[in-house]
Length: 492
Image: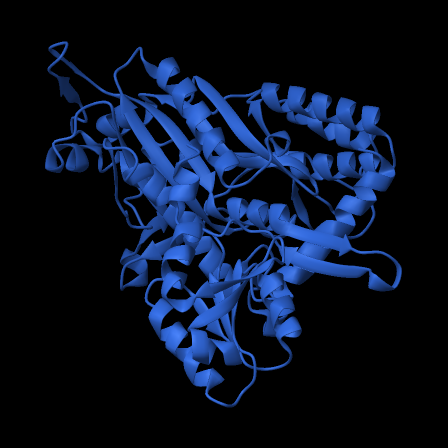
């Protein structure tokens, strides 16, 4: 990316962040108290969009697949869960402190931030060499090498501007708390850093109560918590975030077949949301996690570059085998087809709800100019897939008198049980269109004087601004067809 392109992308991302706040999508958390780093709240339009994304994922998994069911496990889990999963001993990242600012940084974030600055200055080769060197040291867990790389590259603290660094050390990313009414008798527990373990410990409960046969999957949407040191790139990296995960239990020896099947199925899902193929790519892991024998990320091209939105991992039998060992309970499956008892292998798909939300927002943000000279018009709108749009339809009376508001409210009453509807009567119709464009509403309906006589209204389409006359009796069916998840499912 050239320096000019990088500058434009940065500028666009800042516009998207400002737009998200101004139009009720995302707010800084506790803003009246100057906020809390890496924590955000979803506003009135943001929560609708995020819920639509989660609902689509849930239905994709549990309704389109007859061998996948869902659960909702608790955030708090027995502490041994995290010992068995390896999080207590191994869920750490290399960190470094600046002695002057007293700020702590994840080493990879610090180096990646410097690489981004090099790219912005047109030094793409230097940036690439820096990242290659970093990945090499991370793979070998060579902390001294990472420290030397930071010093040799003259990377400075973003806060104080000095390069007075400590040694690189490992820090655990889990939040801990205590449970129990009496302080001295309370037990140390953790806020879950991932949702997967709630699925693994419920493997037998689901398998037996649902009479599930392998291969089968368990899906879950839920909050997870990680003590991320550096707040970066808006909601892309947060301390409190939401995951949409599915663990697919399979016969040992079939893992690569299923790994490749889910890899292709999941990138197809992202394309079906409207993400262009050139904005998506696979990135194989250079260093595998302790539980995996294969891992790939699906990356989306945000304005700040290609970044992970979903991971597909072949987890082997690591999780179930470890929980079996630490709990003393058998977590095995008897396979009638081969007359064998075994601990199942697992292929995981894990997608960030917040990151998908951000990808949808970035992909939807559109600045458009039409006409020339005095007739030139600039328009900003969110080109969100109608099935995901926060508001499906806005209904306007042309004027606030002569029975038009009453007629418009009859249409609201007819539609509101099946669609998120907005009624608005302030300002000119043109200004009302603009407000709906800015939140991504796909359809606007105007009730005029003719509507009282012919029982028809004018419907305006967001993306094309085309307007046409439609009988009121046909509105429900027309909108239902346009906003149905079926339009996405048919592409899968």
